Structures are given as C-alpha cells and as structure tokens.
Amino acid sequence: MALVCRVIPCLDVAAGRVVKGVNFENLRDMGDPVELAREYFAQGADELTFLDVTATVDERATTYDVVRRTAEEVFIPLTVGGGVRSADDVARLLGVGADKVGVNSAAIARPDLVTEIADRFGAQVLVLSLDVKRAPGTHSGFVVTTHGGRTLTSLDAVDWAREAIERGAGELLVNSIDADGTKTGFDLELVALMREVSSVPVIASGGAGRAEDFAPAIHAGADAVLAASVFHSGQLTVGEVKAAMAAAGIEVRK
Image 1 (tube, rainbow, N blue to C red):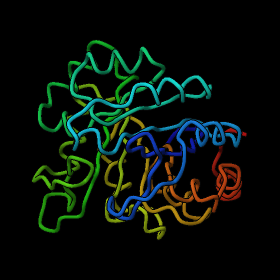
Image 2 (cartoon, rainbow, N blue to C red; image 1 turned 30 degrees about the vertical axis):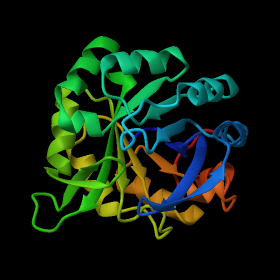
Image 3 (cartoon, helix red, strand yellow; image 1 turned 180 degrees about the vertical axis):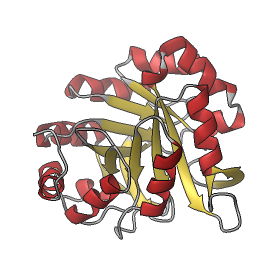
C-alpha cells in the first residue's frame, strides 16, 4: 500500500457528456466533463480518470477535444482510456494533455500492445484497466470483460493482471462490474486478490456509496480509490472522503 493514498474521481464519458449507470447499464447524463473536472480539482482530487465508455463499442477514437479542454482546466494527473488501440493512440492522447493512458479491450485482444506502449513511453504511462466480473469455477473466481463490460471473456482476471504487469503495465485500475453503481461498497475480495499478485499500484473501483466505504478498500490492499456517481450526484465531496479516510488512520494529501 502506498504511503499516501489517492482519491480519484472518474468521468465516464459518452458523446461528450459524463454518464453513469448501474452494472455498466442504463447510462444517464451527469453533466459536462470539463465543468466536473474543474470542480473536483477545486475539491482536492489527487488525480482524474477520464474513460470514454463507448469508444471501443462504437469503434472510434477517444474524443481528443474533450481531453484537451479537460487538461487545460486541471493541474493534477489525468488518466485517459477508451478506444486506445495502438502506441500511436497513446502518443496522441499524451499530446493533448493526458498524463497516463488506460488500455483494456485492445490489450486483451492483442497483449503485445501492453509491451509496445511500455517500451515506447515507460510503465509510468500505462494503466491496465480491468473490468472484472465474478465467474465461479474459474481459477480466481473472476474474469475480465471487454467493450465496456458488454463482452464476457474466459480470461482469468488475476492471470491477466499478472501477465500485463510482466509486460510493463505500471498500474492496475480494477473495476468490479458486479459492484459498479450499486453503492454497496467496493469488492474487497477482488481488491485483496489483485494486491497479492501486483507489484504495481492498485486502484479500487466500483461500488462506493458512503464516505466510510473507501477506507476498507485501502485496508484490503488498494493504493488508490476511484468513484464516480457519489461525486457526480453531489452525495459526497472529495474532501469528505479524505476526511473519512484520515479518521480511519489512512494518510491522504490535504
């Protein structure tokens, strides 16, 4: 676990608007990504994650204009994912202001993509995004999905995380589809499993509903916690989450 734990608002974007659903379905409009990014920066977010959730499904590139405008408004690390299929895509995203780039579906289809990105830009740029679903009977009990959680694979989540780290992934963004948007808390079993096999930082995602939900994810082994709907709805602020984590004995940036 990192010495100082990060709180990361996530902006899931479709057609230039922030959206949120439950279990990756029934997406609803939550606002303008640039305005929300500006607000979270003001609240003290440590980083922002920007995911174009329909780019892979629609077979198009991430919306570079939205990324550029977001990067111009915030001065904290910005991770961008969605529709990244090549090292050249990464170069373009870094060129418009991204600090790190997330890959998921394209890396599963062609694992060499992870190696190519890491070799060209360094592990610190590459975030492996894992949209994970419970699958009893598999090696770890979890498999990864592609295309924004729409396509189930037979690839064991823990085995894939281990391989991607060996290929050069510098961080794991572990999102539980089963918990996503439910506001019932993070999947602590999944977080703990990833911590066991990961030599790189682990970001826990999916399920946050109360300020008290974040500390258990850190105690389970996460280095950072990511959430979307609780921030977008105004239910919680970044400051309230950090205060609850600090009260639980976790060091956070003021």
